[in-house]
Image 1 (cartoon, rainbow over the protein chains, first blue to last red):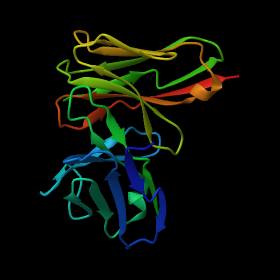
Image 2: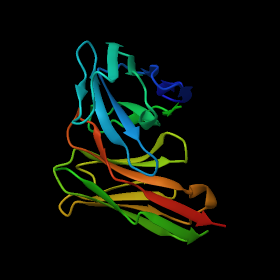
Image 3: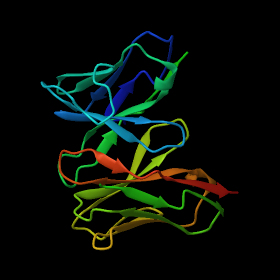
Length: 116
Length: 112
């Protein structure tokens, strides 16, 4: 079964509204989670590193005020897309685990966001 | 800059063929390397994880090799099946708690 759960899997929202995506580690505690974005036919690009109990670290070019990340517990990180625009429509996916050399990184199922 | 390149970008083969997907990375000081499968509109499924000290890993019809000195990894798929059709992603990790650096993937189509 899945060890990282992501919700919702698909969401359609109106332009200007906000959408929250949740990422949960089910079988382990994750002090760090990563959020990626994937545009059609492109690879996954890291957006930010979510750190439990502290501020997220954003990659260059990713607006921290637009993509709010909250990692309030060891098993949950949330990504909120604020004031969404059609160009934010994308596949968002989180990952956790992999801190040890032999530890596999697990990915959530991903969330398809469509902004209309 | 740490980059991961995958060749070819797309590949179409008849069912039953053996095939090789290639991955190269610019910085050889890797922590580990992982191959994933992504079906259209879906998330990622981990296929094989190779630690930096290992040369290869096998799982069923899949075999992944790692040559750190040359900055290369290959994913070998034996006796391909239509169900193998998907995008295969190579990703490199450079230290324990850092994110993966992904290649753009190879889109595989296995024709029955």
